[in-house]
Image (cartoon, rainbow, N blue to C red; front, side, top):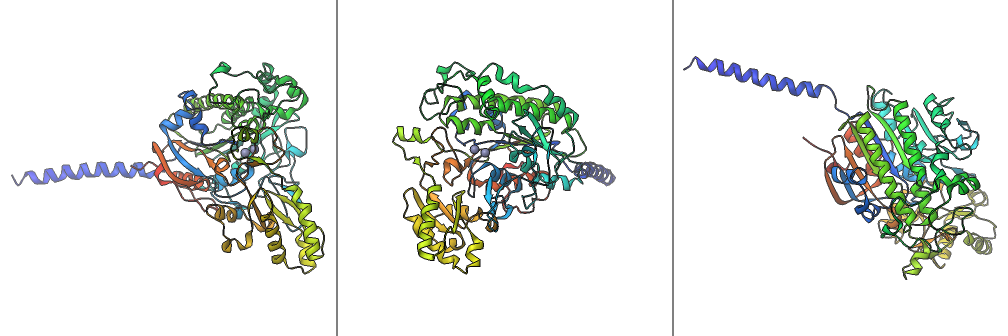
Length: 551
Ligand code: ZN
Ligand code: ZN
C-alpha cells in the first residue's frame, strides 16, 4: 500500500503541470479581436431601435440587440449635441471642455474668427477637385482618440481607417495617427482625403471613384422598399412640414433623384443611398487595407450620415426616415456578413451608437398640441447690443450668438477696462426675460447658479473658454430654429437630442441589456478595457464593465 503513494503523487503532479502549462500558454499571448468596427448612425434617436423593431430583419439591428449588449439609457453628457462634438466624445471618452471641440463651428473668443471643427489651412484635398472640401485634419482636437491609443499600443502595427460622407465624422474618429480618413466631396462625387494623411489616394480608392456609383444609386429614384401603406409607424406622406427636393412639387414618394442631383449634388446626402454608398466604400477599404488580417488589431470607423440628412429634410416621423432605417438595417446585415466572411465569426468587435438624436418637427408638435415652436437667437444680438450700449456706453460688445452661447468681443471689453462680470450679469438678466428662454447662465459662475442636473454638468462639460461664449442660453423644450420650417434639427440638452443607442457586439462582449444610465464618454474607456490598451489622454468616462465577458 505505501508503494502506491509516490505513483499517485507523480500522476497528480503531471496532471497539475499539464493544466498549469496550458494556462500559461494561453496567457502567454494577449488575446485581442482582429478588428474593431465603430459605427455611428448620424442623428439616430434611441427610440428608432424599437419604433421600427418589428420591421427589422434578423441580421442587422436585431443581430446586435439579440446577441450583443445594449445600454438602454446612454446619454450625451454635454451640449451642444451636434456631429463634430459627438464624434470626438465617442472616440475620446472626453468632453468638449477638455477636447476643445465645442461645436461643428465655433467663434475663437480671442480673435472673433469663426472656425470649422476640422478645417486646417496647412493641408489640401487629395483625390477631388476642390481645395476647400479637402483642407481638413484633426489638428483642432487637443487630445488623443481610442484609435490613436490602439496605434500606439501596437507600435503602429494596427491600421486605422475612417469612412463617412462627412469630413468631421471621418477625421475625428480616425484620430491624429490614422492611416487614412475618407469623406465625400460633392463636387466630384468622389471619396477624398487630405494631404494630412497622404499625397495621393490609394489605388483601390481611385478605382472605387472611377465606378461613379452615385449615378447608379440615383438612377431609379427613391421609392419605398415595401408597399407604402405598410408604413404604419409614420406620419402621412404629404405634410407641410416635410422638405422637398429641388424641382419637386410635392414631398411625396417616389422622389426623382436625378432631377434633385442635377440641381444640387449635396441632395444625394439626403437619400438612403448615401448610406449604401458609404457601406460600399467601407467594404472597399476593408479589402484595400486588408483590415482584420494583419498582425495587430485594426480599427474601422464608419459614420452613416444619410440618416441625418433625411431627418433634417423630412423630420423624425416621416415615411422617408422609416424607409431610411429599414434600408440601413439591410446595410448593417450586409456589413456583418462581410465581417464574418472576411475577418471571421467571433473575431470582430463592433459598437453601434449615435452622435446625437433629433427633435420632432415643429409642425408635427403643433398639430398634436405638443410643446414646440420656432426660436431664433440671432435677433437677440441687436437688442442685446442696444441695451449694453446704453448701460456701458460701448457698442457691439456681443459679436454673435452661436451654439446657444453669447460670443463677446473680449478684446474690446478688456482693452476698455469694462467689467466683464457686470456685462455678463446684465446679459443673463436680459436673456432670462425673453420669451422662449428657460434659463440663461454665466458659465463662469455655474457652480453658484440654480441650474438643475444634468443640465449644469452638461453646460460645464461643453465649456472651453477660448472656443465658446461665456453665457449659455437654454431654450424651452421643443424649440427649433426658424430655419427648420420643414424637417428637424438637434443641438440641445433635451432627451430627444441626447438619448442615443449604444450596443456592443462580438468579441468578448457579454450578451444582455443594461438599464442604468451610462454616458457617451463611457464608450472609449469600455473599448480600451476590452482591448487592454490605455484610455485616451483626455478620457473622463467610466468603463461599462457589465458589457465585458469575464471567464
Ligand atoms: Zn450628426
Ligand atoms: Zn444634423
